[in-house]
Image (cartoon, rainbow, N blue to C red; front, side, top):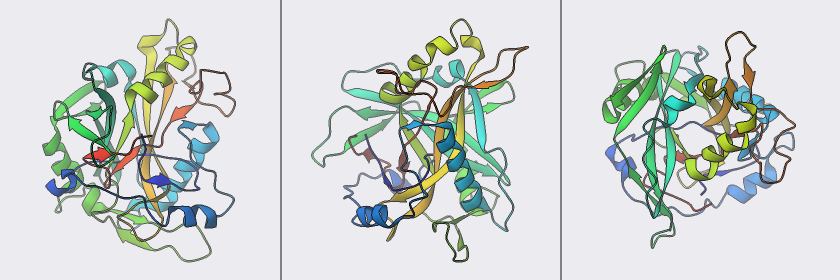
Length: 302
């Protein structure tokens, strides 16, 4: 599956939900005409994003996020990663269903200046419809959030209103501003979040996150209860039909962390992993998620 085409930047992924009910309306997007031109013109110092993320790419994506996404008024955002026990992440995952694949959706929220990330689930059709896209289907309409040592389930629409959309509170839509330009010699151009900016990120489970777990199983064998998924705010250059030119987008990257009491915390992501045949996610992270908008009701086959 594939989403806004990442161009030539370091890394990928965070996104959220229904800006308006119209966000969920089916659409038939076309390939962005500027993507190839931007891919050619981008500075060579940028690395092309990867589904299988190295530590260096993760660091670059975090750095790009920090320099291009902030609270209104210039304050840096805090709490830009969410550490979730793997068992809690998959506890409410829908059962496998014939003709559908599962996908994790990460919603962007804010209690300025702290980021709030909630997650939920979608089903993605295994075969495209007449538009050539893969339709999405919601599951339990819940947004799950880690609060202290507990996982709290919210009504998805209520969570989105409270932390992403409400205009009179320091929510994501009201209190975040972005510099969508590539880093260059020109002055930053900070602007409020627009309806066309990503607000959630969807990452395939069966073909990506499940492999992230399986490919690293020998790293945490016997320690599964101490395994965490880290949802990290990152950024990369994207192009899509909602924007006239390539732009820096807020994205999400997922990697694994092992926290065994009495031992140092260990992030299972390096620059050396992923080289073994059949273990592309070994000591790597996962990104290149589908962003909504523009992919809210359907995604591109990958």
